[in-house]
Structures are given as structure tokens and as C-alpha cells.
Image (cartoon, rainbow, N blue to C red; front, side, top):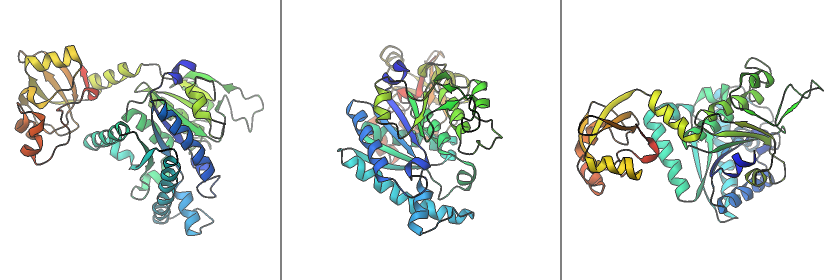
Length: 372
């Protein structure tokens, strides 16, 4: 565990609703303040951290004076809308005490399934990190029914880890980690200190998809670790009230359960780019751009593009070829084919005047580009 977390530069932290709201009694200012202090300390170490936080519905219920969780979807959505105000205010005030800026980001699973919205969300989060702002992320429960009925922020935490190429996902929960069986029912249950993410046996230990533990229980955390591992991020499941848990994990201390990603981050991203996405088009680039990509690891700028082939939209995967037809790379397009044709051979400084706006200065950013 020491090397995995000690070397992590970009970390997604997910905290569960029972921790954030002190078992549903409303936002726990002391607990959030404690995590924010640790997040600020990690940021001071030069690490990039993102917080995925549950708790909006529980806080909304408290503010509305509701003692029982409503069953009607519109009431749950209303509670989420009210509660998001309190959740955002608490994180903002606690992080600001340490001189750290914060931003509220509301996402749905649909945002990360659509190519263009995926790219927009990624750009926003990476920009916030570059500005030394900590994003506080929650599911947008006010507009999506399925997230409230079946969704969980463990999955969202894993999706965010995939989205920003995180090195690690830390899931803080009300349990010390994963056991071989439910310790509340089986006194012989064995604590799992470390395992490989995605191992089928882990799902059985966590209760299985159809068990009573399946909704928001340990199974969702095991499946989240499996999803995070697909982009090379390892996951730690730990008790959220363990003193200085985030700082001690970052120092390499073995706390909770570590589920290790089999595939290194770069290799996982390359595999995803190379094999799992259909190419939608091609840009042909000049020799200077080929050298920039191959020899210097640079992004692809519009000025290096000499021809645009096929029809594609922002967020589609496109091939990058030399003028003699050799595939140099492939990656996610920042501009649609119609826009690419307008800005090809032009400096990035002219993008806004040519299109009326500017998404990015690059045709393909280097983090979204994999060399062939």
C-alpha cells in the first residue's frame, strides 16, 4: 500500500452520506471540516484532489423538517435541490478556512456516457485543478430519476477517477474496509488488507449484486474499484472517521482495504483509446506536427493540420496521420470536423475569430492523445 498511495499525485476522495450527515441528522460540520483540513494539507503537498460527496438529500430533509425519507421522486429531487445548497456552503466555508478555493460540480452518469459532455466535464475539472481549486462533486439528483432510485456515489467516484486519470480513489465509509464475509453475521469473517481490483471473489465477499448489501453497501465499493482500475487507478476503502486517514494514507500507511489496479494508468488509457472506441474521422498533419507529437510529447494544434477527413463531432475519437498515410496517433477531438476544416493551418490565437468561440487551443490535447 505504501508505494501506491504515497506516489499518488491526483486523488479522488469519496465520502458516504452516513458520514457526511452523521447518520442522516444533517451536514456534519466537524467531520467535513476535518476532511477539508486534510484535503488542504494534501493540496499543500502539491497533490491534486477532488471530493465526491454524498449527503444532499439527507441535508435537504433536515432543512425541510422531514423526519422520514420520502418515496416520491419529485420530493427526493426537491430535497436534493435544497440540500445541495447546504452541502456546497459547508465545503466552501471549511476549505476557505485553509485558503483553498472550491467549486460545486453536479454530474450525472449520462454526462460521462456522452462523448461531448464527457470532454466538457473533463476539461472543466482539469481546469479547476490547474487553478488550485478543489472540485466538490455530487450526482445531479435534482434532474435524474435513476440516480436517486438506483445510483450511488461510489460509482460516480470511480467514473470521476476515470474521467481525470486519477492515480487513486479513496472511498471513505462507515466500515474499516472489506471482509471475507459480513462481520456483523459471521464472527469468522477475515479482514482483507489488500487484493487485486476486479477479482471475482471480491464481489462474493461483498455480498453479491443481488444481496441485501447491494444497494449502497460494500458491493458498490468493490464494483467501483473494478471500474476505477480500468483506467489504472487503485482504490482504498477505509473508515472515514479514522484520525487523519487521508494524510496517513498519503504517507504510505496501511489503512483499510487496498484494491490494486492490474494495469498501469498510461497503459490502461492507451488500451481504451486504441481498442475500445470507434474512429470517426482523420486529420492529416504536416511533418513539423509529427515531430512535435512523437519527439516532444506535445498536443496537436490546428496549425499543424493540413487536411480533415470524415465527419465527426467534439469528443469523437479520430486518427492522426502523416501526409504519407502513416497513423501517428489517435485521440479525442476538441472540435467537430466542420470546425476543424475552418481552423486547419491557422494559429490557435485565431480560433475565436474564426468560430466565434474557443473550446481549447488544441485540436487534440496531449492527455487525450495516444501515439500509435
